[in-house]
Image (tube, rainbow, N blue to C red; front, side, top):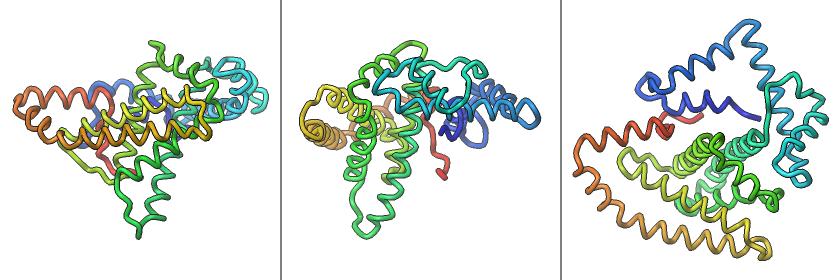
Length: 267
């Protein structure tokens, strides 16, 4: 189930120094009106829960019907919730629901790993590597249909939300792996990890090896490349800082726009 709508999560993401970025204040007010107290708020909450129930019930139909409206229709039948009573739910919503759900499960997985490995003290890279594989394995029940999901995510109407989910995923991975950087490394680490994840995902949909062995070998190589890149990050940081305050201000604006500033404490 969604823990909160994408719009509300985006508003929390850009929360900084006690106030919301003005870019998302309108979205926040809109969501607050839709989920506030009273009859209207209860209706919106029920509508969101019904959507989540339908989309959750639709996932088992993806291997047969793909990431499609038909899978959503079948989920509606199983959930016993007529689609006529809900606002339009499309294939893109189904993909988004799956990714939100899977990303939340990765966070729980990392927390469990941290607890079980407290004495082992495995490094950041090891934990991130385990978490990427864990997240990608969630796709395997739908692997032969995943290229369709990737195409849906690339559509103009879905691209922004898809990018945001990826940004939230890599930010969570670094955060729970212990990263608390507040300088230029914050950007480079997340950009590099997103590249590693996306390239491995693309490799996986073409992999026919047993248990996706070649995919995990590819992942190890990409992480090794990323580690080599990290050795030069200090030089990149120095160059960036030398560009002046205007560049730093521009990066801050970009960070807020992309919803990447999540320095607030996680639950």
